[in-house]
Image (cartoon, rainbow, N blue to C red; front, side):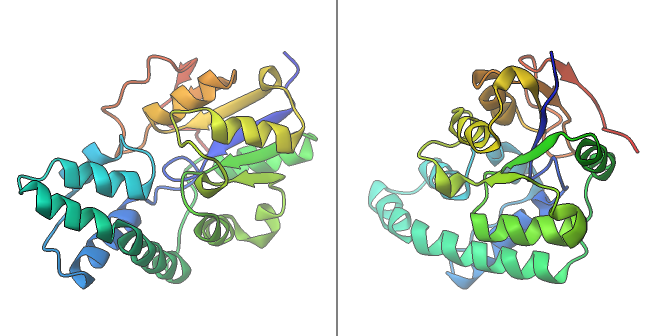
Length: 222
C-alpha cells in the first residue's frame, strides 16, 4: 500500500474533549429547566450514539415518563442542541484544549512527507474549526487539507458517509489512507468506507467494541 493520507476523528481522537461536551449538555439542560444531569457514567453510555441531537433523543426515549411528556421533550431537542453547541463553543474558546499524545507529531510528519491530512468530525462545522485552531494552533491547523463535519452528510457514524465525502475532497482512494478513531462507531464507519483503521480508545470509550479495527493502541505516543 502506498500511503497518501492520514484521517483523524476529532472528538476523543484529536483531543480529549468529551468532558467539555458533557458539561455543555448539562448547562443547556439547566437553562431549559429540565432537571437532567448526565453523570460521567451516563455520558459514557450515550457516547455510543453518534451526534448530539440523536444522543438527546436516545436519552429521552429511555426516560421513565409518559409518552406525552416524551413528545414534549422531543420538540425541545433542536433548540436544546443549539444552546448546547453555543455553550460548548464558549468552553473551547476559553479553555486550553490540548491534542492527545502523538497527534501533533503525526500531522507534522505527514505534512513534511507530502501526505494529506483530513478530519472526520461528528460535531458541527463551526465548533470543529474553533476546536482545531485552539488545539493545534493556526500554523499546524493550516496543514489540514480537508474537514468534514456531521452537518455536511445525511448519515452519521457508523455510516461511512463522513469518510466517503472526505476521501472525495482529499482526492485519494481508501486503500491509500489510514484512519484514527477512538470509538466503535468511528471504527465501523472508517472500515465500511474501506480504510485501514487504528483504534486509539480514550478514557470515555475504553469499554467499547474495537474488534473491527485493524490495530488497537493505547496511545499514539510522543
